[in-house]
Length: 357
Image 1 (cartoon, helix red, strand yellow):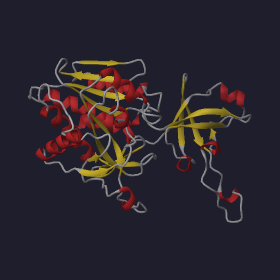
Image 2 (cartoon, helix red, strand yellow; image 1 turned 120 degrees about the vertical axis):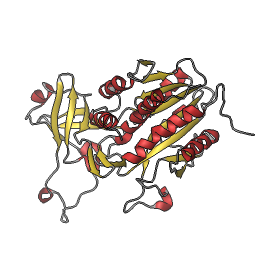
Image 3 (cartoon, helix red, strand yellow; image 1 turned 135 degrees about the vertical axis):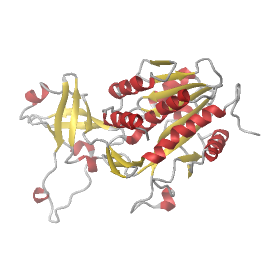
Image 4 (cartoon, helix red, strand yellow; image 1 turned 45 degrees about the vertical axis):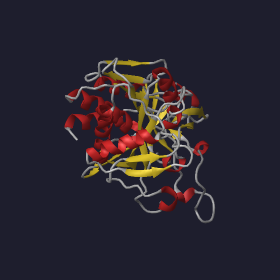
């Protein structure tokens, strides 16, 4: 990965963007992609679009969601301790004893999630059940509700403080690869297409959409307004290459063995077939996943919008998803914009993706 692209990824990941409060990360995204796009804009709810080859046809949407899981201030007690609600799939069990930031109108406020010392825990064995979100309390270093309310208010979003690091070789750790890697990939696709000499038939709309973690809302909004002819969605998927994960239930997906494509339901068979053809031509190994109902990604919202948008999901294997220590392969990640760019180049003017009967 070139130095500038890596710096873009690191900045994206390190910029807090909890669901419903993505504007800081979206600003980073727009400032980068505007150098390569013909046009950029955002809609009423912050979904951002970068257009290349405007007026071409058909219209291809490349989507990655800009938000990350987090929490929000829900209640402040008389002693100034803060209680929270989830934003998305936050895991209370791994949120205890973490450093965090509360993002307020006046600026960031530091805090820690309290953790009772094992010596003080109830029960003869010293063991307690898994905490629920309402059990977590945040210490911001004050001793009263009045003092706390001078700093924060109910509704302020919260993120953990963990930052991007290289673990070893091409493996990286971060808090929010889910799904800052998606917004990175669609922006990088625009960069690759702009740098290439191939004349495009398609209009390419790279999208950084909001609020996926709380209901796929941004994808519904922008897919309806853009009304693309075909869509590629990029998100993370669960790597299953570490202890305790049952491959019989969750499949066999490895970090470092390439991106995945998903088969079934929202994934249009002709779109997936084209992705496979492009990857084969580029000599990129693909891993394969199956779904029996929904994918749990924005693909679920996009494919049934309007009369049905032919869609395909490309995913990045991710160990320890929805944790402060998500692990991905930068080599796997770098291959995804290559596939997306190849897909865009392969589309003929006026081409339609339809199920063959």
